[in-house]
Every structure is written in structure tokens, then in C-alpha cells.
Length: 297
Ligand SMILES: [Zn+2]
Image 1: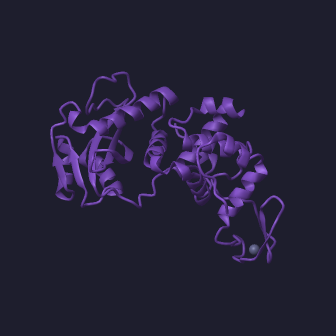
Image 2: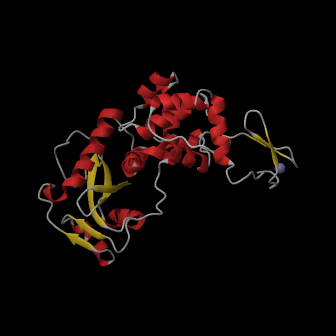
């Protein structure tokens, strides 16, 4: 199949003029390795006009969007593709409200679909960071933006993040995890999910990191108000600003999804050519999610 490359909106609009164009794209992607009937396991099929496939043995028909994250997409695939394109290729994406105005869909419908896209943006956790890694924790929300540190204020959402740097101090990869407190046990999650034991890790002097250093190669240094963690603190500042300005408020149950979206774009900023295709590929490979599973308070 010919994959869509680049970030040009006019070329994108030209490539995906109708829902049918999108169905074909999904169909090519979904059955790239061939068809497999979900009902009887047979592999021979007829391709129908709408790019769905019908099994030659049991006549079961499957559409190109069925069982993917585009499953039963209410507002048509073309709009869904455009929303994916915005979320993948722009720097900050849009709020659900802005997206709803731009594409003429209900705000809540846009919000739910965007959460599905964020599910596809989740890290596979297959490529842990193994170089220079800085780790720190932060809080989001509440009104005391200037009050830094490990406030146990329950209204604030807590997170731990890890940034991999190149040898010359540039951002390589970034991950954020929502955690319930700043205990060693909670902080440890980001190490186990995203960091190799061999990585050269630096944290500040918070005592929560000490027990983790028994298994990981951690050096603890003074933060000096963040001046020893400049790149990491810039990223933390960016994610907090992004949540506050683009989305204004994010619920506790959803915040990890926003973190996933933010990190997805950062981690693929070197692969912008293929970022849209990569996202659609993940949308197709991720099993459908129904609305009930998406709604968080
Ligand atoms: Zn069949």
C-alpha cells in the first residue's frame, strides 16, 4: 500500500477526499498480512465495494474499521482521519471543543474519540531508555503553581517523569506516569516500565529514590531549583502549560491519556514524515474500546 507521508494539510485533504478513501486505507492496513475470518478462521475472502471483506466459507462480513479504534465511529471516517492528523502533526493539538467546532461534531463525541486516539498513543513499553536519564516528580492542578515540590495536597495530581538525553544534552525521549503519591513504590513504576537497569540515571535528593538505587544506577544530586535538571524542567513546564492552556482542566481518571498524547508527539518529533501513518497503524492494531470504558470521572 502507499502510505501517507508528511504534514501538509492540503496534500492530506487531497489524499482523503471521502470516507471511502479512508476505508480503503484502513482495509489495506488491516489486511496487509492477509484476511483471517473471525468467525471460522478461514483465509479466503471477497473484497466488497466498501472495502469490507466477506469470508468465502461462512459469508461473515467484516468492515475495514470493525474491531479497531475506529469501530462504529459515529461521525464518519474522514472526520476521524482529520482529527488523527491534527493530533499527530500539530505541536499542541486542539481541545475537544475546538475540534468539535472545526469538524462539526458534538463536543462530547469529539472528546470520546480523542480519548481513543490517546489510547493508541500509549507507549508499547518495548523500548526502555538505556542512556542518560533524568527523573523527577511534579504536580498538576490546584492553584499554587509557584509552590514547587512534593506537596501532599490531595487536590493536585501527582506524576513522575523520565527524560532521556543525548550526549550533548538534547531531548531524546520522554515518559510521564500518573502516580498516587511520591513514595518509593509509586516512583518505581516509571523505572520498571521505561528504564533499563544499565541506564545512567540522575535524580534530585528526594529520599524516595534511595531504595530504588539498590537496583538501578542512580546518582542523586541537588536540584538547585531545577538548574541541575534544565531540560527536564523545561519539559515539565511545557506539559503543565499545555494542559492548563489547551485543555484548561483534566480529570484524575483521564490525565494519563493526556500525558500519553504529549509524550507521543515528543518521542516522534524526529519521525514527523510517518507520524500520521504510524498513528493510524496503532489505531487499527488496538482493539475496539466501547464508550463505557472511556468515561472517567
Ligand atoms: Zn468465515
